[in-house]
Image 1 (cartoon, rainbow over the protein chains, first blue to last red):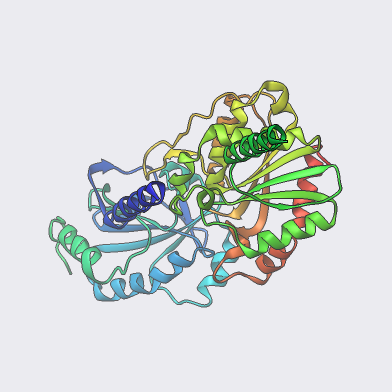
Image 2: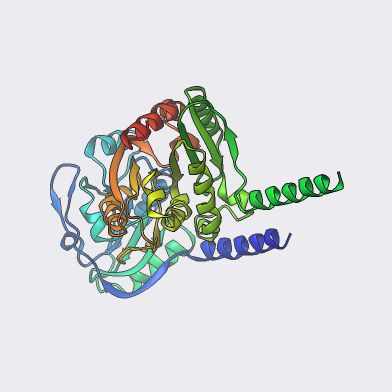
Length: 172
Length: 233
């Protein structure tokens, strides 16, 4: 009985801890390099998004939580139109065929990048999907989130709005 | 007469005590020379696993199926696996070896931790007799974004033959090489195998693909191939 109670208590502690995680703030950490290609084969790096707040999302087409949060990212894009915000979704260790098949079912207005060999996934030390990094306009990592979220509401929206407010680039 | 009754009572108590040192497992007896110890993940024992165990037994491979978190009344969380008593797991492996059959162990996800730590407690000669199949093993102590991963200490695995079955569609796949290196540091012989078009726990997914359903039904075949590759079949 003691063992059972101890187990339940341990489970409660661990479960509470897991839910409390949410967005993890970072002290303006320099971002690792991003070297990827878009769906047309054009090379992309973080320099392409410099001066903007960047939502860099690591995902995969086989990952149900990743796909669940995608529509909210699209709604965020629409809601923030004209703001210096870029949403970038990087397909982790996945080839173009699977990604194209997914995109034929879900229309997204933000760029999708390919990381077919997983090199970006390793450089950014991503161990679970989805994992999302919020970068400030200077290209520094400010927040990290492991797991899905509704991006156009709640804590996610508040954080993004606060980062936009400190952005040196004025909204159009 | 009283003496014999007393002797039987003592033997019964001793036998019960001995069994109490081993985790509670489900046996699928078979007449063949193979014994597979199937250690379920933190998600518990799933129906397709039991079906595969029955099919293996029908093909002559005896299976002992262990749901470690259930056996030790632990929460269904990956880290709970780290609390499984290593000595009792090692005794379980020894009792399997004592039967004289060729013994293999399948550990799913974080169940790799108690299995490998138990293997490290065996005598080197015992360890060499066991083949281990790790299905998408999770051996991290720390795996946080932007941080170098850190793995658990396992103890000596010298002489242990390990095959890692890694589904391609897994966030862990890019990290497979590091995991293999970690096991080699402890002396294991490691052979990774990529399972194409599959996800972790493909036999219990909420929304499985047709391929995952089919592969879930063919798990016995996969494991027979793995036993052969380990030299256990």
